[in-house]
Image (cartoon, rainbow, N blue to C red):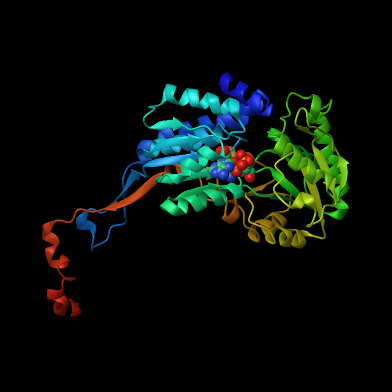
Length: 415
Ligand code: NAD
């Protein structure tokens, strides 16, 4: 465990505790769920009794799809490799893991650990960047799980189309937060800012932007500022509990979006390229055409979009791709139901953020442009399992069996 924590401290400047809570616990939880349940899940399923078929003993066998390729991103490389790996092992698949080139310490560590603990003939790690990934994608696989951004997902899906390889995609997007003025403001501030600052906002289900009524926005901003002051009394830059941006490229990308915003920076805005630090930043009055609304932010910057009411917030969300997660903060059952009933997203949480990724028994996945397919626990096992219907037809059913034969069509017509 300390070796993994140390690797992520090097790659992301991430605090050991954050790695423990957000990655190690989750990975171990997935592995334990899978280990405890695999014998039950792997049993063939019976189907409901049917007069026509019962004699043939129809069953659905759970068979491994075969050899799987798991490509995973830099931001939560432990959970996004070991979680699905547990499902694939349980399903009986052999696996090639392809880490991100942006996490050299973790990528080297996993390449060292996997052959130490697992059969190297069946489980292996291929490190490298685009050339190595491109080569891997030229091979035929029995299943690919790709976790990452939409741009690369298109490359993966196009390559997989050539070999007709099935692909599950776990992507990202702009996960919105709708805030009702009837909410527990202190809780909102803390949870929202935790979701935005964990791993410096480099979380696929991080709250990307907020939709709130104009009159309530100042109170919300204050609650967020209070939470940030509580988290980082001496400022985030001095804190050892705040990660840095993964690379100079991602630093420049996000800094550019901040520099070009037409919104008002009401907190933060600081950055230091030497340390890849971007300060937790609140930007008020961001509109739909703003730089901060042009792509998934994937960093500690929160644009606040002002809306007239909940209907406008719902229209704003529905005018965009279905997000990976959607969050609502409200005390009103009618408000919560209205948002959930009129939107679509991978997951939807009320009065919290991120934690669904930790809940055992939940599927983790997107919808449409935020991904297809889901993993975690049983859903990981299912992803790498082929459902193979089988039956064994005894000779004594021959009378019924002969009905489709041409010689008996005349008899069959009278049934
Ligand atoms: P990315 O798309 O840049 O890279 C992901 C993986 O693809 C890496 O392993 C990388 O080496 C590989 N890759 C890069 N270029 C490639 C190419 N040309 N051909 C084949 N493979 C290639 O993603 P990232 O920046 O590492 O991660 C951030 C994105 O991942 C965000 O959009 C985030 O929302 C998303 N994400 C989604 C989930 C989820 O479970 N839905 C989880 C984490 C991150």
